[in-house]
Structure formats: structure tokens, C-alpha cells
Image (cartoon, rainbow, N blue to C red; front, side):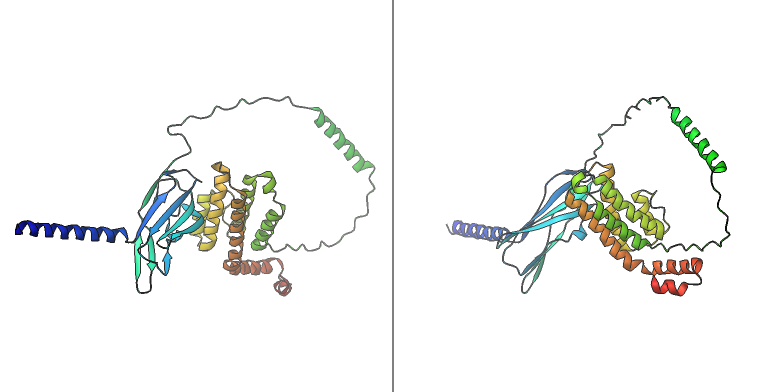
Length: 332
């Protein structure tokens, strides 16, 4: 009988310990990770959600920074919802620009209390890349028939008669003025400032653009991208206008262009390529957000390339205006 009672006591102790461990795990901190899709195409947007369960109130919670996310995704929006005193949630709205499977690695979530700091980690997420080209589709579209159009000859005859009449008048009836020898006035070539030209071009795009009415996003993005390409063509002598986006970015890295300018260029050209080649239709808000990236590029160029502009101006003064260098330096 004593043995039975002893075993019953041991069993009760075991059950009590199990309940205590279960309740501790129930109220411990945890974070759940969710995504709104399992596969992505270029330009697709998706949601990356974090739901946090807490065991107590904390002074502050630091969610993952988007700088730790893969470079093939851009942040569009981020919203935080405090569900209760012991539950918090954060939703990232992201846009995908890669060409292969995407993995968002485990991210830290830091909890700050009065006496301690706790770090918990999200689960890693893998999303599959889905190409817009059908798998195995290697066929070429048929070439359209070239139609021959009849040539119209009478405009050429009329133009020839007009030219003959003009030559007869020129040599026989025109009053020839007396030729006066004069010294040609020196031609002063104006100094070309790539920064001022970029600023003038961006202002013209903003003033004259009717993208809200026409929805011609392809033209709008091309004008912004070409403005930045022209800047590098004129200042750095890089063949930017005839280079692809990837080739231009490699040039910028090779020439040691400022990191902020390179990053702004990458974002503008990436959006322009999506609109021109991937048939991506952006929103009006997204179009003006890309224009804002170009304006930030301009402001950074004013700081980063000021010394390079000064050297070009000094070379211009020495080559074209050696006698009036002082006036140019003071007035330019």
C-alpha cells in the first residue's frame, strides 16, 4: 500500500512539473512569420508579416530593419498594429526585383525592458522565382511581310525646277552688295555645367510632364533615366547613353562614383527597365517617387562632384578664355 501511495505521489509531481513547463512556454515570447505569396515575378509586391506574442509589457520593441533584407527587394510601406498589451504586429509591403529564388533570412526582434534586453529571431522564409516567359517556349514570332510602296516622282521634279529658278535669280537678278572686309568677332564657347543642365532637365520634366493625363509612364521614366545617363556621359565621359543598366552600374563602380549617387541611379534605372521591358505598369505615386529619387541624386551630385566641376571650369577658362579668366571665375 505504501508503495502505491509513493508511486501516486511521484506521478502527481511529474504532472505538476509538466503543467508548469507548458505554462512557461505558453507565456514566453514568440514571433510568427508569414508572407502573402509563395512565388514571385519581377515587379510583384507582397507582404511580409511579423506577429509578436509577449509575456509582459516592454519599454520598447525594435523590429528588423529593411537594410538587412536581400538587395533584390525594396520597401514600399510598413505598418505596425498593437493588437493588445501582450501582442504586437508589423506588416512590410515589399516589391521584388530579382531573377532567382528569394530567401529572407532569420531576422532579430529586440525587446527592451527596464533591466534586461531580449532578442528573439524570426523563421527564415523562401520564395520561389516565377518567370513571365513560359517554360520551354523557344519559338520565334513570324516576321511580318514587307510591303512595297510605289515611289512618287513628281515632288522631285518640282523641287528640281524650284532649285533651277532660284539659281537663275541668284546669279542674274540679285543685287550684289559691296564686300566689306571685317575682322571676325571671337566666338566664346559657353561653359557647360553638367549639374546645372541636369537640374534644368529635371525641372522641365516636372513642369511639362502630363503623365497624370496621358499615363505614358514609359516616356516619363525614359526621360528621367536619360537625364541621369547624360550627366555621367558629360561629366565622367562614360558611354552611358548606349550602355545597358547593368553595364552602366559596372562603369560607376569602376570609376569610383559616390555610393549614394550609384544607389539612386540603380533605383531609377531598375524602375525604368521594368516599365520599358517587363510591361510593368506603375502607379502615379510610384512614378513621382522615382522622380524624387532623381532629385535626391541631383542634390548629392552637387556635393560629391563639386571639385570635379571646378576642375572642368578651370580647364575651360585656360582653353577658351585665357585673357578674361578673372572675369569668368568671378561671374560664373
